[in-house]
Length: 495
Image (tube, rainbow, N blue to C red; front, top):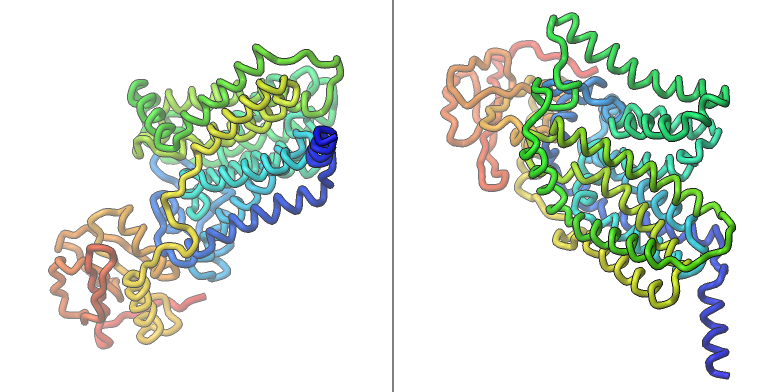
């Protein structure tokens, strides 16, 4: 009698009792809660790191060039739009945070849609969303202006819309077109989908025109922008516009060690090991099933082929051309793999439904344990880190602009010892000013400068300027100088 009651309770808990609206609401609420945890960091962290600062330095343009690369414009379109609106610097960090929210929602929905709609399946989907949000690389990217978080969000959205099934949806075609202007990984995905579905594509006029349209996007991008500039300047591009300098390939051992270092720093190797172990266990000991095919089986079968082939091509390019050669071991290299691995986790959890009880429990334990290794709880997120001295110094720059230059755009000259570090520190307070950075040598003329920001050890002896304020940023101190009224030239008005 007791066993019967326990079994009945388990059936109530595990059966198809979770309504679709309730499950999606739980996923959205969880994603929103994880998103809100990032808001204090967005509001309190004034720095723009690495490529994020470089993008913001060209906030008024759409096409950004760095060395041999032309960055795809989708993210830069957001930045330019916010810049034209005149929004404060911290608002720009909501761009990646918004796509982080989308990534969480659609990862949860895609995972839950594969499973049996029970409460344990919903809990696993929420667990997957939580772990993804706390992965080290994702925590960095969701508050910094990098393409990878947009790439991940669009990847999960495309999976949800039926990318692998080639669903005939105008929204799918629209999102796919946008994705091709977001990250080059989607060019690889387009190639793989064209390759594995070529018979289906050529047999349908809708598919033919759709894929012609999609292929025209990367082709036109390569012809119109990089090649046009290279031809007009007389220098043809090298390295297929992938790597930083003009060398076609880098040392394989250097590329391999850099990639390995990136995966180790993200702890992806623990996650990958767990997935491989569970995959082998399920493949070898899978219980015989009825000969019926359900939607999750079709999705799993198509994703396996698509994922393995896509990742093989993407990471072959990484090894050949080393696009992150200037930042050895950059954790961003692991993001395409990480996006696929979280989808693989959902597929393997689904496959455990066909296993015997012992294997099912053991496989799920290994799967959950390996996923939990991705969680990085080192950084306190609840209140964000404080930067009181930095924000105080920023306020002094703002006060100088408002009190002395009113509605004009002063020319700001920043004496920089390190270009990237200077961008990281001073881009926020000078976002809507005319910035120029110069080296720390004393042979530069400040004739066109209205404001000069220099390290305290810099010997600034121009008599046309007065000292305004001194402040500290981290362990370094800086001094703000401004031009005397009698020596001030005409300043361009804000428009």
